[in-house]
Length: 440
Image 1 (tube, one colour):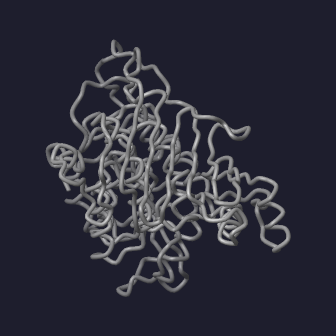
Image 2 (tube, helix red, strand yellow):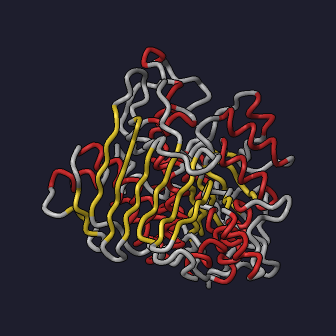
Image 3 (cartoon, helix red, strand yellow):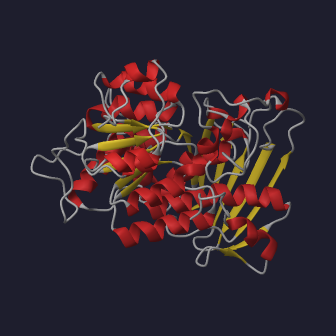
């Protein structure tokens, strides 16, 4: 029987990935390379020594970062690009099973939990399939690309009783907790407006680069549920972010971090705006189509709050992105908002006076704390700090902005029903029909 493990050496020799059919045919009798000592029991808790074995889907940029943090837990890797898979496998210093089709990884009984760092348009379907396979999940932000996808994710997690953490680490930073306490103390009064700034979407990409995909990349699988298009190297890997139907621009990338903090600090994790208005300029050239000079205004009724996002906006601090919280008695400036949260002097003074940490210890990353929180919740079955409902609501903020831009008019949003009021045209854009077999 053929060993299902594809080693880095085999990858270097361009050994083809296993097909799903051949994997399923042999999986019942082939011993896995790594025998998990922490396989989850019937009650969803880890085994005797509480070792959680992870499977990693998407092991490029952010996926490799996860491996550097929790590589000792990794029991299998998956990527549609064999070059990325080979590099990631080399980080571990040991052989683990390697796959091109994530469903093969999900079929393994020795994998307890899944880390998803695929391109954004894959997040929802992969998370749903992982939960249905009985795995707990860490899914990178933004949680979803469409609002109906996000709601399907929430329903799936509730039905399967899986522990899902969304990879927005800002609320794990001690500075975020200090800021939340400062604002809750009433030091600047009731917050009624938040102004966000961020560097603009890039202009670029060459439409004339359309070509045959390299032999190392499964282009059809990379696209998955996204609309079919000819391969162009300027679509991937990170460049997908600059296509509005794939990544959605800075507001869906970094905005998912900035809104993550705002949502947690101002307790918006279970609600949304009542109106959304957006404007921007169509890029003057190139392949990428996310708008420049992008500005979005959200208005909430409960609480009475306005949030404004502007690219590039007016910088209120010496950082490429951040937010200004305006209250009835003053304001405070926060630079960053992802794994970096830099506070102004008044918040630092408050934190110091109340013996609250506001900086990370040397060598510690908010990213790692977020992963640790997920592991802890897998063992306890408690709700993680960035659960799927929170991740869905934060992603919805980003999605609504792009929808308002595309519709070229203000939109009225019912956050409870997650529908636009009397607006069939806008409601048609809330979901994705998928492509071929890739449908929710």
